[in-house]
Length: 307
Image 1 (cartoon, rainbow, N blue to C red):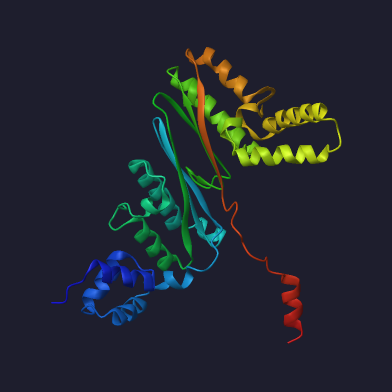
Image 2 (cartoon, helix red, strand yellow):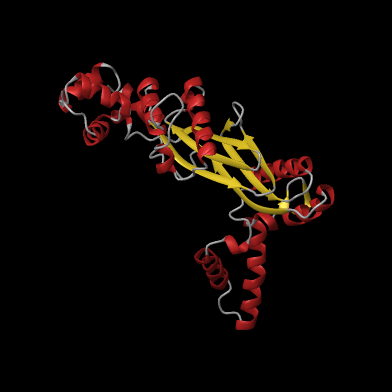
């Protein structure tokens, strides 16, 4: 009997993009002949994933899973918005988020290797869905937040199902205060983050290179002014910049007369204990993905009319 090694299974997976168990089954059926196994998978319709792996996947869903004082959020991409409304795809996104929460795993490559409910790994489940649904899919990113004591806030903008949508936000509040008050505050801050899209929690969390670039812009815009004047202009300009990009310094969308930091400090009264906003994460579906050139439909129609 031919021994089916892990290396052989891995090789077949790389050639076809099919799931691990499907590859193993194909090799068993073909007595370890990898080329015959490729054909076997093609006949079964299980090698479609590899053919689609080069296609841009910028649609899909953001999904989060929350339990007590911990939460995870993932982005699972597909090629079209139509697939994002597919029940199987939604179940896949929700299940992957659940696996991430259970394992507290936010490293995408490690998450792909975790066990998926029903058998195989998360990577296998994605490959199987690609073969079944017929579009390229990618698990793009994942993030985790947790607190020792306190609450997790969450909000999904453009939600299409519970915990699934286009813009997801999770926030973490550290406090021993009343859970209800903390949860309400966490959700309101999450809504603020969805709308205001802050760059960081506070100035200390911004990359020093980014800060220096902003300062240089201010210096160049005000070149020629005396050094002591220029210093004050840069200092004032950076304060304005922090109010624009730092969550704690931003004007709270529910009460623009106060900053988010002030709202958090005042929440101590309602919660009955000090409250600290320790972190947030915001995922907007497809942000930063190069979608390539958009099709010129007018030119396409004109070209067809000449044929």
